[in-house]
Length: 128
Image 1 (tube, rainbow, N blue to C red):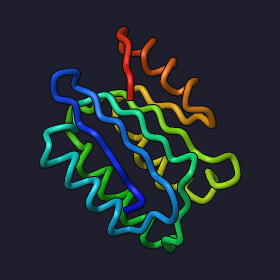
Image 2: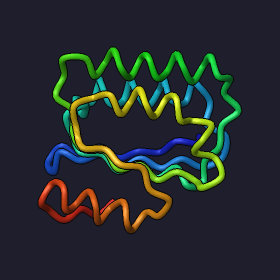
Image 3: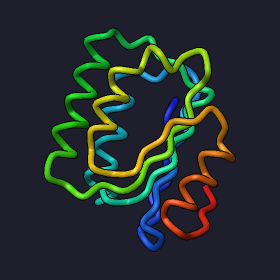
Image 4: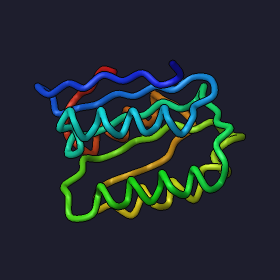
């Protein structure tokens, strides 16, 4: 499985890590975990530095629209995303839709910098 995550209700925090080829079905499963786990409002650190995708543009657009629909009217937590330097452009459209949510969000190429930014934003220490 290319996506792994841990939801920590006590800290209202979710850590996600991707590696290898992430499919549309993998992201759909992640979305269900976020929604079913009540983690939409949690702060999130997502490490996609070792991930890639063979999803089509249409699949990415559909996922972006799904994220946007889920975020509509909801309270969502801060999001720090780590993307590989050479693959971020491919996901730009979906990231734009995710960024439309009313929350602090930033994309990084380094996990430590992403975690430091998120900790500063939320005012507490996190350990993935």
